[in-house]
Image (cartoon, rainbow, N blue to C red; front, side, top):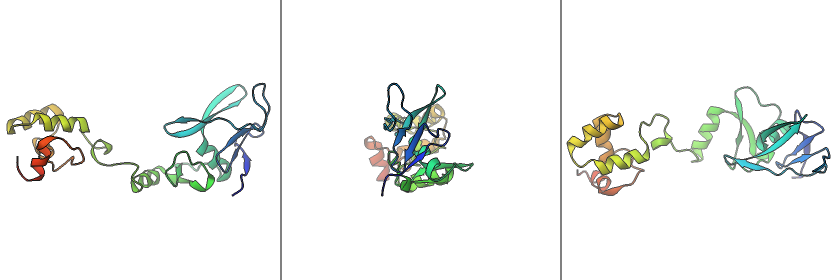
Length: 183
C-alpha cells in the first residue's frame, strides 16, 4: 500500500492525514516546516495530536482524523472501531464506523473486555471485596453480618465463600474447600 495524503477536515491547507495514520503540517510556522510529521502523544492508549487553527489548539485522536478524511464524516450514533483492536494501528484498512453497541460487542468477542466480576456493570462488589469476604467469613453467622456490610444477600456471601461465584478471584482455602463441596 502506498501512503496517500488527504486534508484534515476542518483544517484544509493547514494539516493533512495519511492512510497510514500520520499527520503532517502543510503550512510552515516559525518552529516547524511544512511537511513535518506531527508527534503523537497517547491518551488511554490512543494516539492523538494537537491541531491549531486561528490560535485555538484542539486535541484530536488520530483514528478519528483518518476515518473522517478517508471514510467520510462520522454518522450520528457511530464511532470508530479498530478492527484488530490495536489502538495504535490507525491505518485506514483497520478502521470502520460502528455503533457503540457493536464496538463493545467487538471488544468482548476479542477478549478485550471482561464481563466477570467488577467488569460487569451490574456488579455490587469488587474483587477486593470478594477477597475480604472470603478472608473474613469463618462461621455461618459471619455471612449475615458481611451481607449487611456489603449490601448483598446472605446467599450471595455463601456463594462467594463456597466458590460458586467470583471463581476468577483466587484466594485462600475457602475457595478450594467450596469447589470440593465442603465448608
